[in-house]
Amino acid sequence: MINKALTTLGSYFIFLKQVFRKPENVRLYLKQFIVEADKLVFSSVLIVAVISLFIGGVLVIQTASNLENPFIDKMYVGYMVRESLILEFCSTMIALILAGKVGSNIASELGSMRITEQIDAMEMMGINSAGFLVRPKILAATILNPLLMMLSFLLGLAGAWLVVKLTGIIRIASFVEGITYCYNGFYIFYSAFKMSLFSFIISSVSAFCGYYAHGGSLGVGRKSTHAIVASSILILLFDLIVTQLMLY
Amino acid sequence: MIEVKHLYKSFEDKDVLIDINAVFDTGKCNMIIGKSGSGKTVLLKNLIGLLSPDKGDIIYEGNSLINMSGKNKKLLHRNIGILFQGSALYDFTTVLGNVMFPLDFFSDLSYNEKLARARFCLDRVNIKDSDNKYPSELSGGMQKRVGIARAIALNPKFLFCDEPNSGLDPYTSILIDQLIEEITKEMNITTVINTHDMNSMLEHGDNIYFVKGGTIAWHGDKRSILSSDNAALKEFVCANALARNIIEGQEK
Ligand SMILES: Nc1ncnc2c1ncn2[C@@H]1O[C@H](COP(=O)(O)OP(=O)(O)OP(=O)(O)O)[C@@H](O)[C@H]1O
Ligand SMILES: [Mg+2]
Image (cartoon, rainbow over all chains, first blue to last red; front, side, top):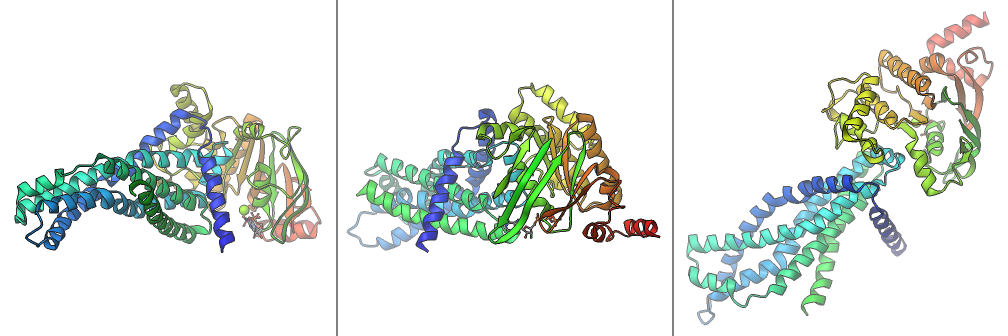
């Protein structure tokens, strides 16, 4: 069991080394980067936007109903919504959603290329298939996903603002005061960093799972499930580690 | 010319190839024939380096594949074209994109020259007006032909085809076989074909190796295949009704 885990870890790092070998043709890698950015990042904008708007709205109602106490300034509702969004929701929760969406996409795409011998065909042309197919995915997700996190943050606040505006659950002025209260720029960095790290985990782990798929379409299905489960667990684990290291 | 010397390959405890010796000549359609599961694909994968043999060597024009440095292996791979059993076209790109792919990676030609070369290869295999189709929109026979076009794009010295006509109707099979033979003679390349198609062997087999039980059980060409008295070969050949009639006719 432990033996198997260590072997897997070892092959994961060997895989990464292969992925980051010197590219044969930089121009083609760049072109692929743009394709992957579109496929992995920009295509997720809509789902991230919808989820963030709704969660922002829900968060503000829940927080307001928990702060009924007349001695607590209502301004704290806005403040707490902002902090929950930036600290946990916009990075970790969005990353978990992306692990499902992007992770299964990467694993099943590479898996079916493997079982239909497309990867062999590429290797036989003398092309580093892991590099060409995987590196642009990892780079696109790791570099660009923090933009999704920023978008999610802004739209979460917008969702909360909209709910306050429509329901009058608290005064709009104290909500605005709350979301600007005690603003800490480091939290934005912390959240963006987490998002980058989680995106690296999602893309590299899913690619690893898919790249070594075998056993026909069943095998590919199995590997995409693995990809989602493994990246989700690793995200939670690293969330804990990074938070302990950066915030405490 | 490719020479195979004392090649052994086994998986876990199953010996798939046992002491294989063969010579594949330039400008000829060399064939590896045998029943399903006899080890043809494993032999082919050893030849091209997708699997490494347990023992023995493969010599490409005097250069041993086993002792070749990584760099030389890469150079060799650029001189190898392969048609896979399932075509293995890249489904992230179009027909034209597939043929352009090796050119984009490895040639210093200008875009227009590459385009011209890709068009030439596609014309050569009779694929017209399909530049912008994706592989999933093609029939099996068309996929094979695009696979051949991709394999010859870089002017290879060696061409490997794993069952080029499995899953095709007899007529299309003949066209694909003819195409491979023409290209082999035209470009003077060393072609190795895995097949269990009787038509292909009788029409195009210049140099045939019959694999059985992991060894070369018979070696000859299309003229001698029907007159051989090798029992195992006879059994294999007689599975085909036409060939059986001919052989029985000879014996009478
Ligand atoms: N990766 C592998 N691991 C274990 N055994 C294998 C592997 N690849 C092939 N074999 C075994 O090697 C033997 C030969 O397989 P191979 O694919 O070469 O047959 P083949 O002659 O190409 O058959 P077909 O005509 O059906 O394609 C089979 O018994 C197969 O089970
Ligand atoms: Mg085979």
